[in-house]
Length: 364
Length: 76
Image (cartoon, rainbow over all chains, first blue to last red; front, side, top):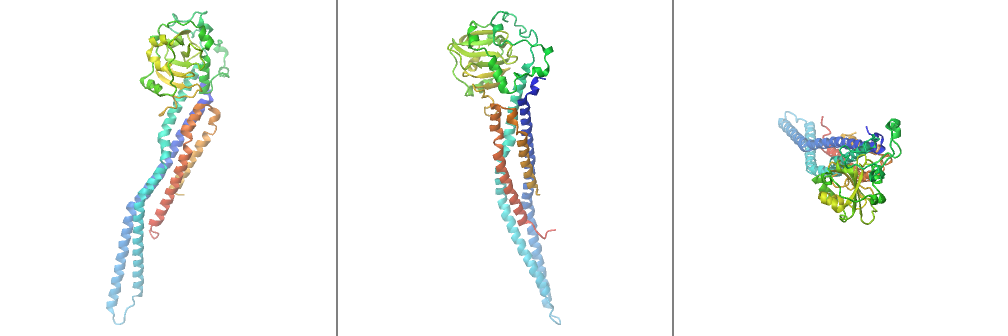
């Protein structure tokens, strides 16, 4: 488990993800209950109520007729004294009133039934923004958080102390720098650590990245500065054409849409490449914001264990592109950019203020 | 309490819980990515919820009036 398990921002992102998903689920449950109630009332209004009140009108009218017949029958009897029909008249009037009431109710039901669809539409339109958050933004938010958390976890995995001898890459002995060469004097050199004397808490020292920004700062800090770059002797780099850094077509297209894209440096401008980049698909491309004339400012280094470079090489943009014309777009990012590519997939594309233009693309 | 009123209370409670859980987000996650995340995904929630609650209140009122106008108070 990387020491990143202790990183506050990673935990905060996890909590934000859980909270956002829980919120969306709670909203779905509440809105479903309201929808069910609205639908139930709609069926009651449009199906059950009209039938009910028609039945009640008919029953009341039948009752009126029955009392009318009863009154007629009693009026015809007239034997030997007239029979009282006061009660029957009262009951007939009551039945007439009920029939009238039921007809009024039926008219009201029909009025509401006609207006119901419009009211439901109004209600549903008031939920459109919340529904967009629940069904549209929630997947986008979790995707973005997942990508950020994955990036942090990958970067924090680099924090494990280096094992002795790991600096030299397997199969790279023919290109590794000798002890007195430029590589050992590079700003990437780190004081050796002894894992046996290093407790987990000690390893989680103050220079351990706590946030993505810390990770970016560390990558930038590890890029060779102008003086270190100037000290390197430009020469063709063997094996560039076989380097595994190669963007997927989707990410290549996405990169071309970013505002981060600038102008390709001059062919004669200097580029510095870490030897590990020739063998590994985990690459951090960093372009100095203040490179001197004749220097593109580009540094291509490993993004995993970035301080273990395997040695540094300098060449020109022209030489580089002759071997790797597919890196044209990559090298066109403007000064101050930081791009991390893992196995052809862009993990982040930062501007000079460490704002991730890649994450802020629509649909991420 | 009607079913709609209860569900409205649940919605408001969901927002309250979200606010409480993310109250200290800026303290532990303090970078531009967090600012952008809030702008894109958290800031739109309050106005959306406000509009939804207004719509639910209106629907609740309509349902109550429909029930009052269309029921039969002599119905068994």
